[in-house]
Structures are given as structure tokens and as C-alpha cells.
Length: 161
Image (cartoon, rainbow, N blue to C red):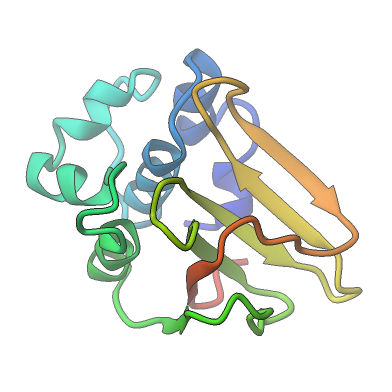
């Protein structure tokens, strides 16, 4: 499945994202499930995605510092081989143009985190796809990537577009 098509209005992913304001890990888990070919008959409710693989879903939807990289590890488990970068320094990570990346960030004390997807265009612009329970789904093109966290893990996905 091509990731850019999953993000279009009318897709199974957008049915869920447009139905309610999803948490960041929930949106990423839905995208990962769709990429791996696991889509419920009624995709607009996140609970239907959860029912497809409850054990995996619980790992992918980590909202706490305990097991802080569980979302990234769940994505790797579901999608197979990918390039994984971990950064403990807070420095800029290398992102691959023309590829999607799953990014999970935490503050230095693990009190706050965020998980999202980024696509780097050939001109270096950044398409960031994320969600949170306050603002909901967002798909925005930025001139550059601004990290919020001090600690980050990045999965560079196999070519999906």
C-alpha cells in the first residue's frame, strides 16, 4: 500500500483520523496496520483497528515513559526491516529525502513524548503527519524539521511511494 494514498480523504486511515481526535500513537498504529494490509471492515472507529491485533495494539499505543520506545519497536515488528536511528544527544538526525520516517520523541525526563510521520521532499521540505487529542489530524508541509524532544528514535521506512 502506498502511504500517500492512505493519507487521502476517503481512505481507511482518514476515516479513523477524521472521525475523532486521535492520540499520536493511535494514528501511527493505524497507519502501520494499514501499510501491513490489516484494515477493519469499519475503519472509522479506532476500536475496530484495536480488535484486529490487541496485543500488538497495546505495544504500539504506549503513552508512558515505561517502555518509551515501544511504539517504534511495534512499527518495526509489523513492517519488517527498516533503518532505525536512535539519538540521545538532541542533535539533528539524518532524514532520507524521498522516504517516510516514523519518529518518536521524548523530553529528557520522559515527562512528555510525541510520535508522528515525516516525509522529506527532494527540495528538503518536510511533510509532517500527526495527531493529538486536542487538535486532531494534521498533514502540514514545513520548510524544515523542528524537533521538540531531546531524545528521539527514527525509523526510515522502505520506499513506499
